[in-house]
Image (cartoon, rainbow, N blue to C red; front, side):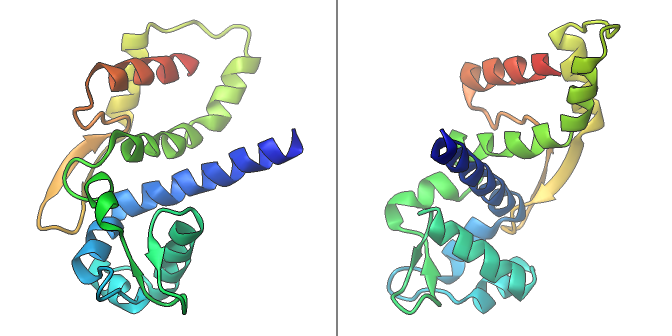
Length: 175
């Protein structure tokens, strides 16, 4: 059980790192400055994405350890494998990448959820009331570094159909 719990913890950290990459447009930036024939350095990524060099190094190494991106044998140049570009980049990445953002969404309300679970006087809210409250509290605008910004609300399904809606409803019902 101990190793299984460690695996879950590591994958949770990877999910947060994937979320950072998506939110900050790091996958798009990496794809723009590097490929298998001409891999990118951490410096190139940091300059393209407008992030700090140390953060770029940590993020890239996390993505390599998570088997998300590729690295050269010297460990200093990176790229996204061609077969993974569609899932990691663009305006509508793979649903799994978007769902990684759920970890960060849930973590912002974790303490409140624990307190609500302990509070025997808490009145249950309908899923619609809960979803409306959370959407109004957590709306934001962000850019993926590819020339335009767009508005999202936490839990933004990115058009992933009913599966995303059902998952959102189940998660919101927890809170």
